[in-house]
Image (cartoon, rainbow, N blue to C red; front, side):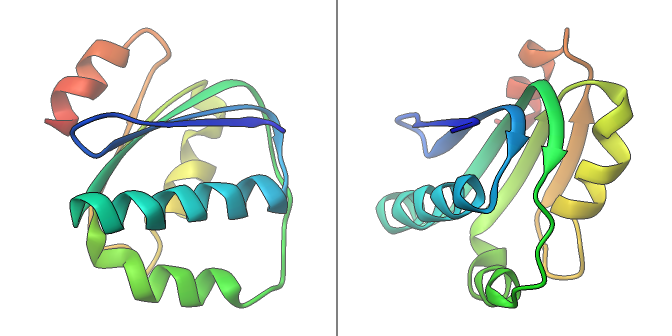
Length: 118
């Protein structure tokens, strides 16, 4: 799997994605988000892209159902990674079903990203 997910005590999901993100990885991430929402009510996400190569495209409608059900429960998402992925990640994470803020950071800015998520 190309994804590692840890939930910190404050409801912050620390998601590290490396290599290529599959549909199974995405489903695992969604399950972790739902679990954290049940524990904390709302969550924030810190997504760190490490040697990231993209994600598997899908024509399934499940994502729309997930986003429409939980979009108001994700307050903020900080994405840290190579600048070449910022436009794609921003479009993927801040689409029409996202009410929370999304901000992109360079790989050297993890501290700044955590501060922004507070």
